[in-house]
Amino acid sequence: YSPRLLFLSGIGAKKDLEAVGLEVVKDLPAVGRNLTAARFSPLAWRTAEPTLSQMMGEPISPAGSKADPKAFGSAVLEATARVRSAAGAHADPKSKRPDIVLSFMPLFYAPKSAPLQYSLQGEEWPLRTNAFSILATLGETKAQGSVTFPSGAPDVSPVVTHEAMTHPEDLARVKEAVEWARRIGGSQAFSQPTEAIENGAGAPDMWTAVYDGRGTCQMGREHHNSVVDHKLRVHGITGLRVVDGSVIPVGSPYLAVPEVLALAERASELLINHHVTATAAAEAVSVIGIPDTHVTIDRLSDTLGGGFSMMQAVAYLAGTQSESLLQTPRSMPLALAPGAVVGIMGATSAVAAAFVLVTRRERARKAKESSYAALLA
View 1 (cartoon, rainbow, N blue to C red):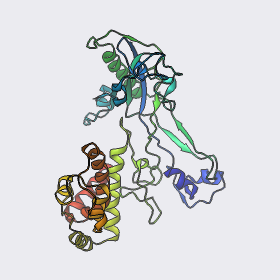
View 2: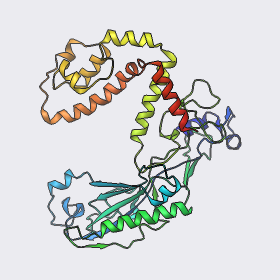
View 3: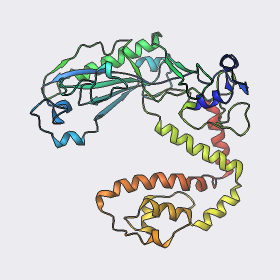
View 4: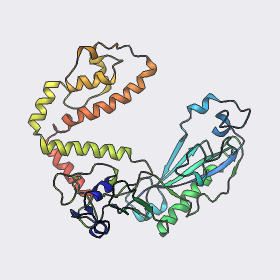
């Protein structure tokens, strides 16, 4: 969405804007370019051990099948292994980050069903194939892609293109990931014999891009090959920042949630430092009574009780503790507690981070500036 919003606002490659009749506000050729996304391929093995295809009950499983309660407790991605490929280690000897991820799934996931037809395994019901899959995922590829815009009209969808993996380094990673997956899938450690399903999965042209692509508004120093600087500011446009996964310049075998959360916290710090003085923020913190280091669930529980609701936490942190909220029963059923904790963590990070971040010392802020700048070196 970010490259599309920028493009429709006149920020993008000059020739592309003019081609669809849009006024050129800023010539930034990197808008929509440099798309990088993890690629995965699902290798599968038949097994006599029941998988989800036989455990869901009718009409998903064959006629006469009874639902197994354990199936509905499955996380689908049941186990994950991470490894640094030899190709990656050769290309970047100093890096130790995993660039191959192998994920075990107790169901058959056919290549033709990736990534959109995710109705368990892309077969008509009742499901016929009793098999498990190992998703081999590459986090870093030389192959990239682009998001282009065939029209200047907002109701015309952009075109997303992913390049085929043809670079020798990509092909080396493909080979290594497939070898790892086959070694695990054919292992004698399984309690029942397995039989590999030969459907082309793992071949160089049978890898699918994961949907959370990055890089289309990538961070960098130069206007010709990036869209934002290390403070997330769009080059040449005052008061405009991009804060989402599109600014991340490199790929990863994982979904971008952790990186995006880190970007959001970084953006909140940048905005507060730009608009609010540290003294004013510190005074606000002291009035509300938020701890001057960080907020924890335990500290909230000491004040609000062990079964506090998300709204109680928000009201407390915002300094607007109404009687009606604080009178909410604190004896929440234990079964609801995990959901409350997740909600509270999201709420506290949104409300408290703005005050907490700006109280850090100037020396720490400058050190962080240097760290972000170093990423672009």
